Image (cartoon, rainbow, N blue to C red):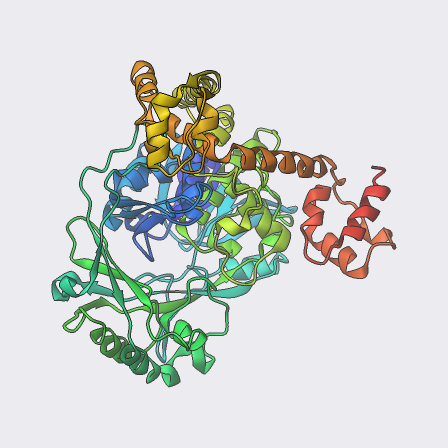
Amino acid sequence: MSLFNTTYDVLVIGAGHAGCEAAHASAKLGAHTLLITMSLQNLAQMSCNPAMGGIAKGQILREIDALGGMSGIVADKTAIQFKMLNKSKGPAMWSPRAQSDRMQFSEEWRNVLENTKNLDLYQDMVTNLLVENGQITGVRTSLDFPIKAKSVILTAGTFLNGTIHIGTKQFSGGRAGERASTGITKELVNLGFETDRMKTGTPPRVDARSLDFSKMEEQPGDEIPIKFSYSDASSFLKEQRSCYLAHTSPEVHRLLKTGFARSPMFTGTIISAGPRYCPSIEEKIERFSSKDRHQLFVEPEGWTTNEYYVNGFSTSLPEDVQDKALRSVSGFENVKIIRFGYAIEYDYFPPTQLKHSLETKRIANLYFAGQVNGTTGYEEAAAQGLMAGINAVLKLQNKEAFVLKRNEAYIGVLIDDLITKGTEEPYRMFTSRAEFRTLLRQDNADIRLTPKGNRLGLASDKRLDIVKEKIKNTATFIQFLKKTSIKPNAINPLLLSLGSKAIKQSMKMYKVFSRPEFNIEIIRSVKEIANYIHEHQTCTSVLEQVGIDLKYSGYINKEKKTAEKLSRLENVRIPENFDFDKIKSLSIEARQKLSKIKPVTISQASRISGVSPSDISVLLVYLGR
């Protein structure tokens, strides 16, 4: 079937992490989908660091997987190292992270997409959006022919009018070696959309053969690595590659400062906001002047390549300054730079212009996902792409939008933050952004979201059965602990060895093992528990759930009750096209903010900056609640 006479159900612009998830989801849900990208050789590129997951990002990746997305499976199949971060803290903070083979990651995503039914790929640049009567009808490409579509998802990343900065040099580009995308921003502005600029950056890549790793601290992966994906479709990591830790020094900082006069960060050439929590090395030196050194994580980009990523040295300083400063880092004395670091400015669209479904408020059936919404990070982009792909199909099927609440997923927090609060700097997810993070752990994303993914048609029945079995086995194990007593002579030696008070009479196991001295590894060494695990063939994921319940059930139940109370406001809906200006008892700021954001529930309205509790009370009274 020719592009000239086909009307696609869903057309996705851009094949980064957001675009790939969007295209895969919509096609898997039965929509005839077209994915357009300027380069089919660069699908799902890891433009910055070659890693997936991390603090809060790992939770998002597991949520994507639980819903039926592919990023977790692709990350597992192409991982070269895996670590569970924050293990010294409570389970709400545990975050999985994996180093990836950057080239294999892109290749594996292409394999996934080429083998997805209902999905077509096409290489070209979209320059215009076709709109009729306030609704998207397709796009026009650089080859000047139209492609018709019932819905369009824009996931252009950093490519929209991208400008690359290295010292005093500036040139057009979406990332190093690739041209920028032009035309779409102008089209959207003409349609009435607000736009602005953001900045991000990347560090130099270096040749590992020129480094002295003996002067650095080796950072191996976990001894027993686990996977991102809850499915059986991803491989288990049997071998791993190490990362290394190096540090800057006062001399490195002195050399970097010699280039500040030519830095686009300080000369005013770059005026847009960069990521607050991932600053360039020159920003670190300026902002944290009292620190005489900063960490550098030296990370391999694949199994066989000699190219390494210098995480922590993101910069747009001139090439000669980058070279001199890196050579002053211990272990980098003879460094050979493969690619210099650079900063990139690009267009984004303030996300308050979107609905929770990620459909734009101004143009029907047009969706935005990824960095065009002001986010930073592969995981945040992939999550938005997945949700946009799902919702584009649901709307075509005349079904209600799929929206995750803040107490259901980090993805829900991400999207709600974006469309309710907006962002003036690249938005990055942190555990601190989620008020219910004890509920939103990486270990229970399958329990929280696989049933939802299954109802949508993304997560298979097999995956749902695995989750049900996990829930049942966990509940059975906990009941065994609550009903079964343990005698003093069976447990006291262990209690005393842990510095815990001995028991004088038989006591229920659950009460004994809830003591802070215990963890699941210690508990499984108890004979009675070891016998139970052997008899029931209890898997690691169930043991993890039991251990968390023993230690944190009180906190978890308290947070559930709080979430239930707050969720009542989610059920108080505000009519569509509600006129806030007519309620004169609202503050002027509240009227302005509410009219702009157009919240759909009282709960969402309460999270808008500038809307006070008294304004919410007025709204509740006016709505008759």
